[in-house]
Length: 266
Image (tube, rainbow, N blue to C red):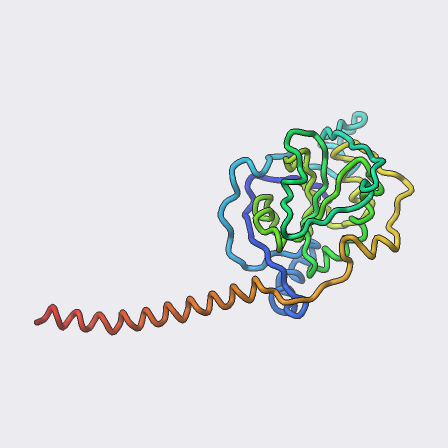
């Protein structure tokens, strides 16, 4: 139950949304197989090109709340991430913002500031993302001075690759535009999320905040979605076309080689 942080250049993987109908095939294979760890994997898709230099930060391992290395606890620990708290009186301070396919995460992160943002990478077909949704929806009320963003990892594959998202849900804490820590707790609840943020930033959550009925309604969906996976369909069609093309070319070469041998004999 450790809040682990980003390592150096984890293997990048391009995610794609998998429809609920297909979960007994591809999605069930990756989602159910990962049930012990509470994550939906990306399946057996090919790895994407390496992430650009400097995309990931080398960070230390974060122990659960109240634990100290070597069993020592000499007073309160200093925050690992120094966050500049925002003005929490604005009308949009208590709302989780979900990025659409045309929005770039980097547009919402200021590299020249020390503002802290908690970003969730999720997919609407993953049951672990869906079970986390109401708890994550309630976080902006618990921490009104922080910003909370969520994005569909299947729609932002380049960002998923850049920040090493090989399984969802994936929660990263950013300071400015730099990823500082990854939430790696198998029990994803409001309380464990509060502890993670407090351990990293030293910012205390509001005690009266709980998961309400409104949090189950949104903005992050708490119901599994079904639909056509166009990216998967295109990939299958492309692969089938390539196999047919390669087969035809191979047969042509086989017919060509005997003809060339006869020419050399003459």
